[in-house]
Amino acid sequence: MKIEFITNASVLVTLASKKTVLCDPWYTDAIYYGSWYNFPPLANKKHYQSLKPSYIYISHIHPDHLDGESLRRYPRDTEIWLGNLP
Image (cartoon, rainbow, N blue to C red; front, side, top):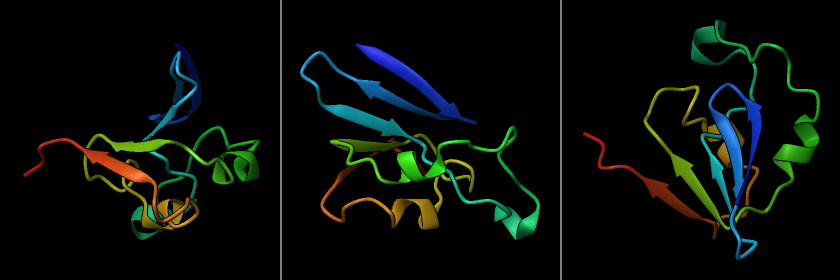
């Protein structure tokens, strides 16, 4: 297994099977009423936006973990995993 830190809470996990799990993708600046930015700025934003993960995991529903703009960049048929959230 390989774990690659991307930014904030976003990581890419590559399993032994070569399947990948993208966790909490948030690559859009000025979310949450224009007040939240990734710091430091994401250097390879286009690379991470063009990934084709096997799965996407959303840990919880704060805007820096569940960003619709970032999610729209991934194939619509990507399976999304959510915790048992209220």
